[in-house]
Image 1 (tube, rainbow, N blue to C red):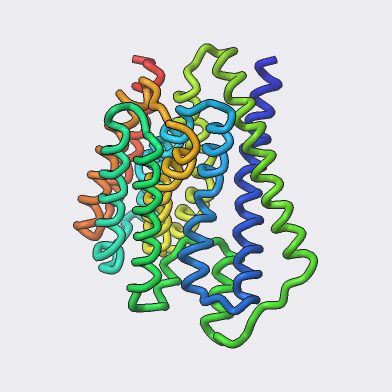
Image 2 (cartoon, helix red, strand yellow):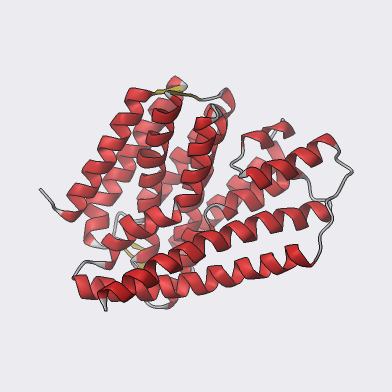
Length: 328
């Protein structure tokens, strides 16, 4: 029975991540075909798409009555994004250089988003009013990004996979050229949505059963395995960008994802039910996220993340896992 649910967990997680990928790529193509600007597509579709696995799995969990999942998912994903993904990226690139654009906008927004999340979960729950506050904060962030971005070429700094960059390049070179869409794009868009919904449903089923069989709190499985799995898109994008010495892409990916996790992955499910924070997430996960974000912001201010800092990030992530499971 244990092996069965482990297999279901892995397959569901893979379906969730791949479904988000199909949805993201084909939604961009369709958006470009309707004449939407590449910057708007980047902010709305790319920004949301890379965090779709976290959002969908958290929403399904809430409707199943597992209200501790959204906060554990957001906290775990943000920790993994910073300590694991940035750590690996810094080691691969040997030195990540942050641009002034990220310092001017993304660092303050990441700090504000994290403070808002910390403020709402201090009483170990997120009420509907607090959830509305988080969602409104994200809408303000989105509006500010769309209306006040001075350089449209900053789209190059947004997270992207190979397919995404190709389409952004096409529109940049010829803003009047629109890609044609056909049955293939629509089919994979629908397939991506189906994979997201079905994958999230069985992921939560598997997680509930595994927590019962292994006698491990649902929040612990969420903040580790689920959070890591749903962060795989960010991991692949950032590591590839670091290997190609594209530090802006590697880091910009993390900024946008963490703001979305803090405000929407928690805020949206909280509109339907009051969310709770399990003990391990509150006592270990929340302080670890706050510390990781603080260190990341300090690294961002210095505009450089060296290899030794990346190694320190990885050691901190290992320590977080060890403390979470109480191995020593």
